Image (cartoon, rainbow, N blue to C red; front, side):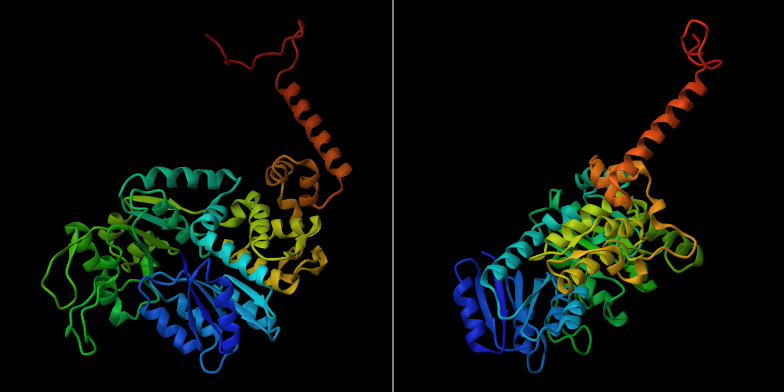
Length: 445
């Protein structure tokens, strides 16, 4: 049974939710944000889900949501508020909250949000995010299936927001270590003086504040998979130790002498060009080659526009009473370059779901960032074939994506077909007998 923490400073509210949800979840209660953060920090096993009020004395629901993201196994956090504080809710969702529920609560909506969030934690969302119709993502998924079978180190590269952690989770899910723990640690977020202690652990007395033995990420992920995100940000001294650990397949806690066998599959991720970092002397060449046994580059969203419609629909459907996109709005969103990639797209959907629940959104109602740049018609970025691929072959839907009427779309298809036929005749001019003339040298025995 999944563990749920309910956080609300109103006793009747938290106890009422506990009574309603107690048959489906193992429920714990907290009367404040501070109490919730304390429970989250020492929970064993960790919580799976957190349902927290937004405005509370002291620590707010935003603080709770932010704290969740710092935990080794972060629970999904759903915010609720009676104040209709939409900008704050949008900010929270952009920071990683899974959903937002307005008060007074509808119990059906609460249960649906919890079910949906729980399913996403089990991998449904990961598959939806990385699954696509584009050839680029088909190649990524094929490589994921192949590398998952081994224990080889994989270096995931790509722009910010392309889904590197999600792909890492999918590699773990398909691997022989799937029953083990998956941990992700951001190398850029670790305080410089605590990097080695965080990764490899420390013994009591190893430094001034070391009051007890602390297992690091490598030890806590034993038997599973560890993703070292933003690996290009590791300090030089940590790079040396990491290389030694990978070569010896063992490590020692800081201040300790015991050698601990390395039983973890390491995945690394970066949005930096590590080859350039090596050339500048910012990153060790030997560690780069050790990490990049297998390299997997994730394409930016602008290079797989066919995947934009299903991603938009998936993230919008994840909310109760989702808004719907008119064809002209879909065309504009498909033409946009999405510099923040899937993360930006998801945040956009979360914002839209909060601000425009249940409404139909037209192009002229979209934010100005989606407007074509001067001298550029955005929808011309999408070809007829691209629109058809985005629409799964549905011509009416493809016409909507291009922002044109069905008759115009069919006319363009006919014109394209005539052009293809004309080119084919031109390439193979008829011979007197009616058979096409074979180009010189083609098919000769």
